Each structure stands twice: as C-alpha cells, then as structure tokens.
Image 1: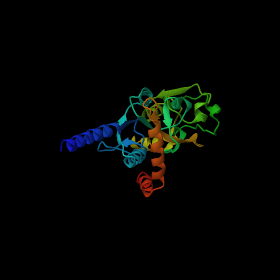
Image 2 (image 1 turned 90 degrees about the vertical axis):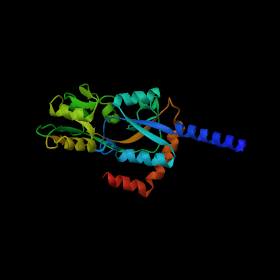
Image 3 (image 1 turned 45 degrees about the vertical axis):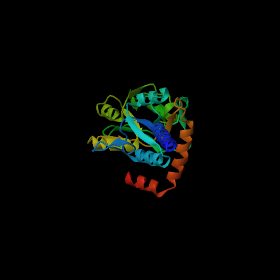
Image 4 (image 1 turned 90 degrees about the horizontal axis):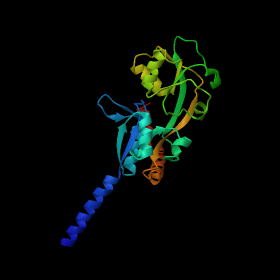
Length: 245
C-alpha cells in the first residue's frame, strides 16, 4: 500500500509539473480586429486567437494571452519574459531572437489611407511619396518593399488608433496599415466617411507566431506548425474563417 501511495503521489506531482510547464504566455499588441481584440464582455477573441486556441488544445498546452504596447511585446520575447508573440512578419532582425515555423497564421495586406477630401494619389512608386509625412507603427514591419524604401519622413506612433487620429488631425499626410483593421477601426470610431484607402496595396505578407529563442522554444515552434497545418485541413478552420468573415 505504501508503494502504491508513493507511486500515486509521484504521478500527481509529475502531472502538476508537466501542466505548469505546458502553460505559455503569448503577447499581443493593440486590438487588431478581426485578428485579435477584446469583445464587449471583456473576453479576448478574433480569428487568430481562435486559431491559436484550437492548435493549443490539439497539442495539449495552455495559453495565456497578455496585451502590451507593440514595442514592449518584442522586448519581452527577446528577453524571455514571454514565450511567443502573435501575428507578426518574419524579418532578419526578429529571426535573431525568435523561432518562426513554416505554417503561417494568415496573410496581411497593408495599404495607404488618406483623408477623403484630399487629392493625394499613389501609383505604386514609393519614391514619389518621399516629401510626405507617413504615419506608421513604431518597430513594425510592413514588408520588405516598404521597410527598405528611402522614406525619411515617417511619423512613428504605437497604435493604429493613434495613427487614425493623427491623420484626422492632419499631423501626417498618409498612414499605412492592415486594410481590414483600419477599415474596422475607422468604422468603430465613426469616421469611415473621412478616411479613404489608396490603391495599389503596398504589401501582402504572411503573418507568423514567433517563439522565443531565449526560452528554447524551437521544438514547440515546430510542434505548433505541424498542428496548425493539420487544423487548416479541417472543417474547424473553415468555421473560424466564416465566423470572422
């Protein structure tokens, strides 16, 4: 009986340790509807939130989402104070401290937005915009074409909402951002008639979940990638897509 009791206690303790080890913290920036946002009840939701939750359930890990300013999220993953960061582009700088798996979360389209009552145009030549002040998120990537452009007059802020307010306040000529997110935010702010998109789009790039190298999460990144590929082939993934249009 003592032997059975000892084995039972050891199994219980090892299970608790395993469960503690399987809880990971994923950080995210400002609400980014429909990808990730806080709903009216104070619950985190969105297309990517539900995709990550479905994958986490499949590979039997617990997920805790934490929201901070974008720049702080990057620092937390680099220092190992967070396990992963959600929906971001893969860049050479980020690969220095993050693991990026092969399977992507989604594609992001970025484009310019202007005040509706201005005559500004864009023909795809970024160089033609060099004299304009362009609002963009601090420490954000908009894809290699924009990131490498010779644009010295970039007005950096921390959130998309701040960018929209800067545009409306005429503190910049244009802002750049995810087309779905900017469209939803201007609608929520009640200013959709004052802001207009410019075409062509600037970039269409894949979004990843980046795992911390400081936390030695290379194996977890690959496990997550395989499970994400499995999810994408299922009806559950189609249901999430339809839920968030």
